[in-house]
Image (cartoon, one colour):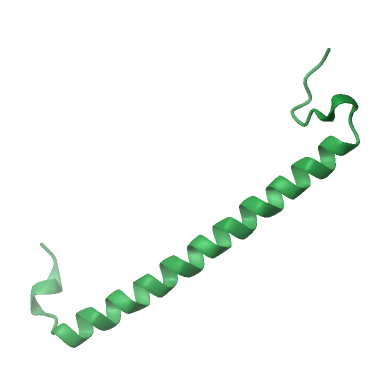
Amino acid sequence: MSDLGVIGDAELVEELSMLTTQTARMRARMADIMAELDRRRRAAGAGRPGGHVHGARR
């Protein structure tokens, strides 16, 4: 295993709390990025006939 066996309980709880907070921030950032990409795709598709975004040719 790693050095976790020599770290005290308080330090482990503190690190876990920090990682949980970072994870929540990363998830929120990912959701923001996905929403922005969706918004851009919709905006790009709005100007095309049929609303196709991927450049499909007919």
